[in-house]
Amino acid sequence: MYTVIQYLHSLWAYLVIIMIFIAVTNAIFGLLGKRPFEFRDFRISLFTLIVAHLQILIGLILFFVSPMVQWFNSGQDKSLIMKDSTLRLVNLEHPLTMIIAIILITIGFSKQKKKVEPKAKFKIILIFYGIALLLVLGRIPWSLWF
Image 1 (cartoon, rainbow, N blue to C red):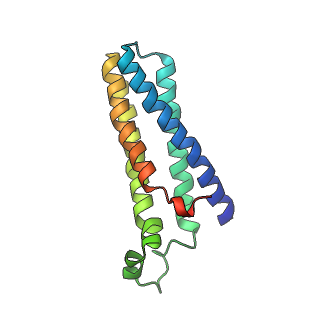
Image 2 (tube, helix red, strand yellow):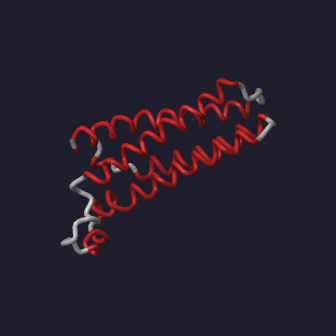
Image 3 (spheres, rainbow, N blue to C red):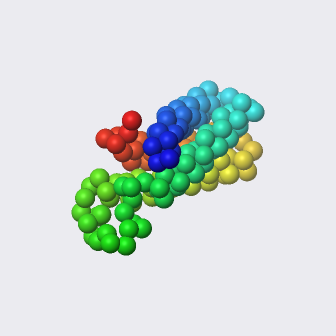
């Protein structure tokens, strides 16, 4: 079961990165082109939100079934997790950073819905989704990834 979930999480991550990149690129072109915020733009930001939320759900399941996650092992000294860079990445840095990225995407989506002016909508998506993209790319465990 662990291997299937890990594979799905790794595979779905490609879709998340692609969708965030598309949303950020779309926001850049929308701002620079001074075009109206259309239903297509809304769908891109919404689909990115959905894909990212599914990824965090898969990631949380993986977090609780992974043999690399040591927080729940009562015999494990927690200071050893912090001293080992791989364990620290898997147990703390990656999950925390990804949760923050998902929160940013969610806030960005909610804020852009409340704006009326297209420029403001594109700007919010660019800022929030852009920061989320940087966080995601910065904390993917590339050495452990398929």
